[in-house]
Image (tube, rainbow, N blue to C red; front, side):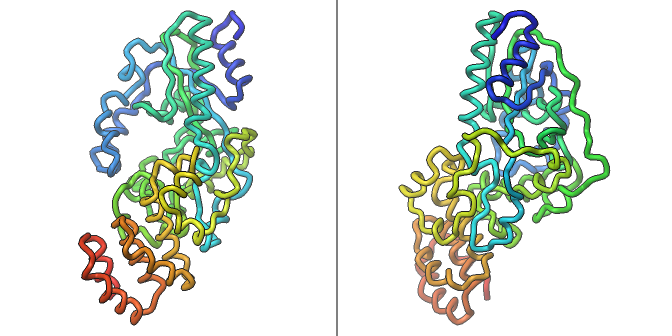
Length: 372
């Protein structure tokens, strides 16, 4: 990295290393603390107790590290080549969120950030700390303060140049750098992201109830997915891109040029019939290097069986019976639910009489009883 103006040198080096956008912010986050408190007090965080536990450190970068003077915010474009919504019309296939179709972005960004942070520290004899969704950093507000874009009505970052498709990372440093102008909200009167949400997860613009969000339900939620959301989930087996995909600013988006972020072929249009029979070993092998791996086999199969139940295809009925005695109550419950969607009443009665008396999980027993 060349000496001289630190900000210009850091910007040039970041772009040279493969980051698509970079901005600089100060150590404050505006009124993010107020929004976070409202989110938590309304219970919109659901199972994500770590958000409440780290609330005080999330209000601003300085609350996380007292010595920080500047934040270097970077983004990498992961724009898809196809419309993610098209896959929702193929009920025998599983829809995986665009961000999870390639290599785990945490590792991709962290490797580049570590190199950039090291060069900053060496060139200007300063301290640095780097983050990629791994600490109490409010990444989207930070990115907006650094001018990378703005938080849209769906609460995600929107970029004038990359639409909805940016992975974010940050370097905190005690080196004082000139800040960029914050991103200006360009949503206007548009509410496409609000209106398309299958589970009505936005109580109002700029406010998300995560407990109703399909991404939360299929990724973060560790328990049984409430019945009221299962039909709306459709064939989404990991995350949801609806609110991102319909944003008009995507007309400026570009297909990702980064090989590490391009989709693996087996995650483009995976067949539900192939996915539903993955055991622990096969699950870990198939999703090695993917963010999907952190779900574990049981939660993943839970999601797949919901998609099977929504497929309207009776060809799955016989295969579903093999999951009735699965070791995981998450899987057993969703197997029963899927059978109630696809099987006949007489067949369900026979299965219930055969298996319900063997069931000790109350949620699974409840599934057997609800179809009547």
